[in-house]
Length: 324
Image (cartoon, rainbow, N blue to C red; front, side, top):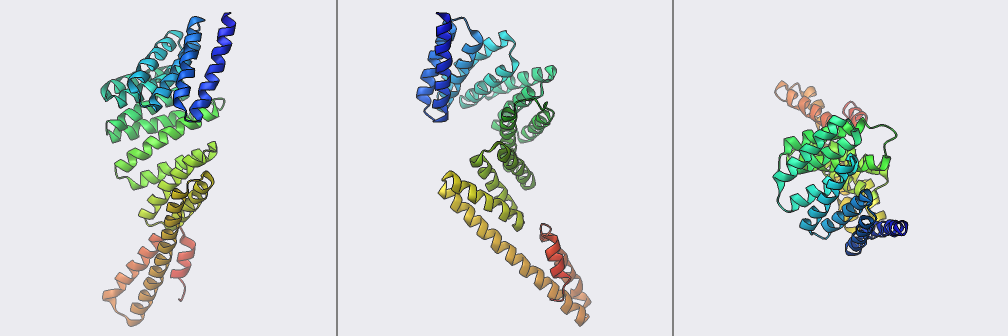
């Protein structure tokens, strides 16, 4: 009889996960709750905790943070008793998200800090990286941007130390989550260079994991950042790929936005080429005229033109050094 209950409960977990992927969170919650009851009646605390965590995730999606917090705390308590640190950290993520939604930021910080320290002591790199990801998310919610960036980098370092046998999809999901937090922190901190770097790393991570929508979102940030930095070539590359990915995902509005950024990058590249030609011509003119008062400014213009084109150095240096 107990075996039958466990089999039915396991089937309900699969049903719940399918509903989660389809964004039907009410049905996902119903199936997870039923599974938790069956596992509880069978005395299977470990799987009951898994079902409770799934129910907490569904409650979060349904914007019911109080219910999510109560459910995830039950899961955490069971997993703590069982000594399953990895799954306890996963449940902590739901608890932290629920606490943040409820405005319990200090409590979320304390819980995430305690968990990350425990994981550090145990030396489990992937679990540590996931715990640090949750801690970085709490710091971001508190607008502690310096702490957010520091903890996010620690999480990435922990992820980089993971054993090759660690679950690849779990590792990529953790890394992508950390990079998304780091990107937000850099953007809010006004760090253009850091934002572009985080977005580039995020895009590559999503490409490896075959997440086209997330990769396209990351490339959108890359394209915007490169345009703001007046680097047209990488902006062209990022916006072009993002345009294609958004089209494949059926997101026409975002695809059109990328088409616009692509055209802006093309215009910027042409404008900068014309500036390089003008700088070269001014240099030749003032050199031939022997006007020392303007020669330095012309030389500086040539230097600036080279610097602006450091993403396409060979072509521009050839232009500046030509007789055009």
